[in-house]
Image 1 (cartoon, rainbow, N blue to C red):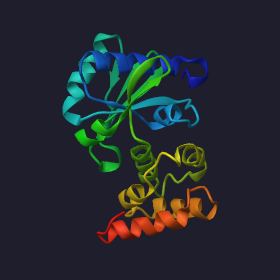
Image 2 (image 1 turned 135 degrees about the vertical axis):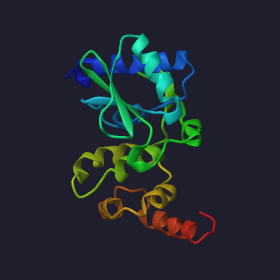
Image 3 (image 1 turned 180 degrees about the vertical axis):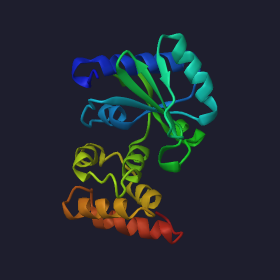
Length: 201
């Protein structure tokens, strides 16, 4: 598969974004390339976009019309499309959390490579990355570069509230605090506790 190093993934990313924008399909860049747009490391394997499930049929017709190949996997939360050998995931329910209009509305319009496109907020990105952690996939090492790059852009109390039900996410955030990666980790924890109690946070 063509990786990010030779630019093929960026071409696929730009092609999908331009096609969806031209068809007025609401979406946002997500995953590794959204992190890269915000200062994180460039991914090498695929491109992720999030969109509403109701808009998926229209999006697939649009992408097929520009020469992309659709592959519907057995998973019930995404569809895969290919530009040549380059994989693009269209995600509508990451970690059993359906993408909402509010999430798309909160995305920031940014220039990514050569195309302006909506990019998921750093908080939503980190929520998605933390909620995939489980007994079968728990690779903290791959998360540290993203946390370091995005930490000043993340709403940490909101993030902690969204992932509080996941023991894997809680342990990872605690480890980040111990390592001094989080900005003022003690204050963040206190703000999250205040927010959980219904007070200002």
